[in-house]
Image 1 (cartoon, rainbow, N blue to C red):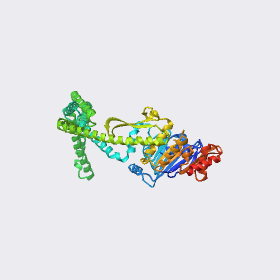
Image 2 (image 1 turned 90 degrees about the vertical axis):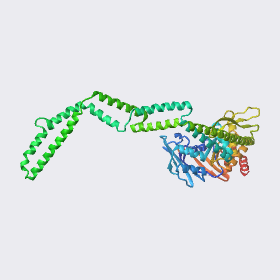
Image 3 (image 1 turned 135 degrees about the vertical axis):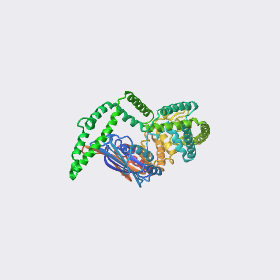
Length: 551
């Protein structure tokens, strides 16, 4: 449950720690005092859209910290899945600055808005006059019915889900084998073409680099022939070439071999001579191969284009192209030998489809039994809220099987006898929605996973005996789940366990909202103020308030 909410620079609130209790928490205060600020701050902290207008005037940022205690096993499991620390307390912190940047932390660890929103679904449910826990959204109706059914439905749902996933796996396997006969033949033709195209190319892993090197050499052969020829003239062929000059220099030193330093120089000259002769032989070999051949250059260029085309179609490298070739051969072999496998697979698919249909039927029958009980429960709850003659029905339509079964569920509603049943989202008025919401909450009060429900003026437009019954419904919910409620109705306020008063004050040129907890006589006065609606509270209102609270 929500233990406390700390607000910094939120709207009219400068800094405030609001502490909540078990059961029924009631927020009181005049219109405009700032009660909705508390709810907006909690909603923002738990993932609602960040609104810069929520930042207190003159400040650069706001911060809200929500502390939860005694969290549910579902919350603990979620935190573990997200690798978030599980402690005795769950602390959610969210900040927002004027640039629109928001930061989120759960137990001190930074996290994403998506994670926070997933967590908040397990923590708190916000219910206003027109916020009806998805009542108006047909897409949620099946989930609400299943929630009412609870654990009794789980084995049937699990069986349907398992069979559906098995059917999907089998159909994916069938698809991998080419689908129907015509699709398989088309796939085999494509594979044969691709295999032939790659095999006809006679690919070699080292070929591409060799071709590129040869292309560069052949395209530069004229230049190579000329430059290598000039080098040979200077080294070994021309007059006064380097080879002859070094040879002669070496011979001049032959007679001085008794002098060690001179002998070393002669030896080095001799080595240079033989090195130059060796270089000359290599260059002569290169020169002899440099006859320019335009046809060879064209052949190399065409081959490189072919390799480029194959890589563009089948892989980034020649190695990947060859791997793709092996894959095509394997796939073609499987397709050409798949008749027996396909026959067996189609038989299995037919068998699982039959099982799935039967499982969906069993699930549907079970749901319909709960739907009848659910509808009767809602009608009884609504009658207790002075909506007599109401008709509520769960409508079932059969659809294609899915992992949820083949039921398409829609809530139908009529507020008055003699009127046709219509979609809930097309017929319920605002006041009726408030009572519908309470009816649903009471019908599911022992099914709720969230530990805190926020009611924001759900009693709007309701008075008299209906308000008294509505108050009892909220009280019933608070026996199972923590309730935080904003109300202007005395009978609703009188049922609370914890009272929080929101007041607005002016200090200098600034306006502030403050929250304080009430007890004793202060509670009686504020409940009495709901009767009179002004600053002065009459004795009659005080007596009425005492009677309500004591009851």
